Structures are given as structure tokens and as C-alpha cells.
Amino acid sequence: MVAELARLRRELAALQARHEALLGSSSWRLTAPLRGVARWLAPLRNRGLRWLRRAPMIGPWLIHAALVRRHAAIHGEAPRLDPPVTFNEHILHRILFDRDPRLKLLNDKLAVRAFIRARVGEDYVVPLLGTWSDPALVEWDRLPLPFVLKPNHSSGHIAYVRTEADLDRVRLTALARSWLAEDYFDTAMEWGYRNLPRRLLAEPLLRGPDGATLVEAQVFTFHGRAAILRVFVGVKGGDDRREVCFDAQGVLVPLTTFFSQSAVRLEPDLFDRLIAVAETLSAGFSHLRIDFNLTTDGPMIGEITSYNGGGVHPWYNPEWDGILGRMWAEQAPQPGGSQILAPET
Image 1 (cartoon, helix red, strand yellow):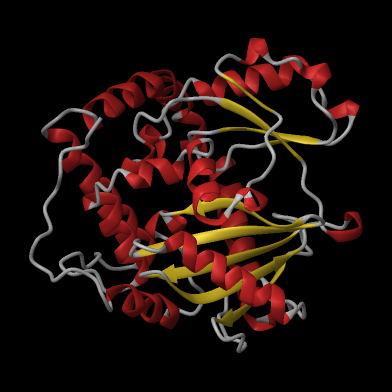
Image 2 (image 1 turned 180 degrees about the horizontal axis):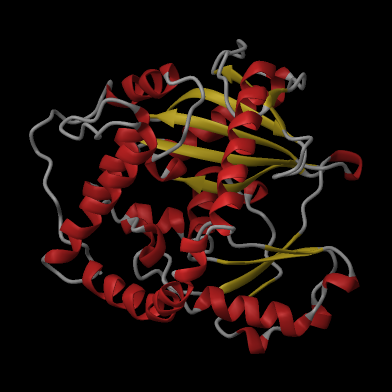
């Protein structure tokens, strides 16, 4: 890992040097007016492209071409889709071909609460402080600090409001409006987000035992059976982020990823509980990732993920892309039926 990080730092330094050389070149200065025109036209181009992606006939083909190109650019080869082989290829196959209506339920951060509640009970549902269709209706002074703000219909959008200093009502209202203005399908091109109802929601900021930063656990399931459990400690995006991975029996798995390995270990009873809950939630699905927050009040489901990494997750150990792909394929439908389906409303 140390050698790999050193290599990445050298590559980053080389890229920065090339970038600085480009910015200082005469060709960069001479083409500045053209870049200005391109920036001015970009919104028009993006709106037109989004409209075309929603067109009944051409839209699925445009999405197919864009996602295949992205996969090839990141993984260095075109994806195999009939049948998919690696885990990332299976995710891409799901994005392009799977029209199971339950995927929309799972991707909706409000609707999925009823699914969690029905399968494993209220204790695993994160408390809800409020939900709104218009940010102007939020009564900010009634929300207990600390809390998080997020939209129900997208991924990766979140605002942390820890103190009164973070409670900038104008900024939060504008941010929430920008979230609700966009159908996340137009960005991600993932059918499970298409035309979801758009709402704003607030939840309490969850903390780990004794007020510590949350420990997060992700259980990867295939055909209702847990395969691996990844445990994350440290702040997301922080230098202290660490992880460790186990199989469903609790045996340490050498899954090399971006983060240094953590020494954290879950108590056996908690480990078995997470596995059991994840398997109950994922019954009837070819693959789901169940994301737990290990809070002072016990484990809660932060999210159920159906499109892990958008099909371009860069496993540092490529072998695991194949291992997880084989787990998915064990009970997968026979090849030969793939077709580009017109997006549904």
C-alpha cells in the first residue's frame, strides 16, 4: 500500500506539472475566447442531450453508448454484457436492462423506509425530522441541532448542519432548490432514479457510541445471501478513513481498496445481526448492498444500494471484481436475452 501511494503521488505531481505548463502556454491564452463560447453553450447542449436521452427510441441507445464508453475508459476494455462477468459488468447490465420496479422504491430515500420497516422493523429506520416539497416551507428554527439535510431522489447530495453557525437559511434553501430542480436520472443515467418524486428531508445527525464518529458497515448480498461485510471508520473524505473486510463467516478478507486497513473488529453478536438483517432485506434480489450506521441506539439502515459505484467501482485488486461477479452469476438468468429496453416513466 505504501508503494502504491508513492506511485500515485508521483503521477499526481506529473499531472500537476503538465497542467501548469498548459496554463502558461500561448495556445491556452489564444483559445480562451473559444472556451468562453463553449461554456456559454454548455447549458444548451446539456439540456438538449438530456432531452434526447429521454426520447422513446433513441434515448436508450444514447445511454447505452455513453455508459459503455465510460466503462471502457475506466476499466481499459469494453464491458461484456451477454452475459456480464465481473461485478462492475453486472451493475452496468442492471442499469441498462433491469426494469424491476422495486429498484425505484429502493432508490427513493423516503419510500424505502416502508420497505425496511416491513421487512426488519422500525428499529432499523433512521428517524425523520421532516419532509418538504418546497424548501421555503422548512421551519428551520424547529429542527433540532445537529441534523442532516438531503433530497430523497438522488445520491451523494447532503448538507451537515452541526451548529447554529452552519444554519445559513439562505444558503441551505438555495442548495435544496438546486437538488429538487434536477431529476437525478439525467445525471446518473440509472433507470431506478428516473422520475422519482422529489422531496427534501431532514434527519438527526447520527453518532456512534459515546458521541464518536459513526462506524459504517456495508454488507454485499447476492441472491439473498451475504458475501462480504466491509467496515469503515473515520470521516468520509478524511485522512483518517480506514476499512476492513470480512466474509460472511467473519474471516478477514484481503480486499484491497483505497483505504488503509483498520484494526476494528465487530462483536460477534453484532456481526451476526448485521448479516441476518442484510439477508432478510435482500431476499428476492440478485444483488443489494445494505449500508448500516452503527449508532449509539444500535444499527440503522442508512441506505440500500442497488447500483454500487455506477458500474465503474475501481477495485484496487481487480481479482475481486471477478470474484463478486461469479457470486452474482451463480443464480443469474441464462445469457441471450439482453436487449436495450426503452426507459419507462
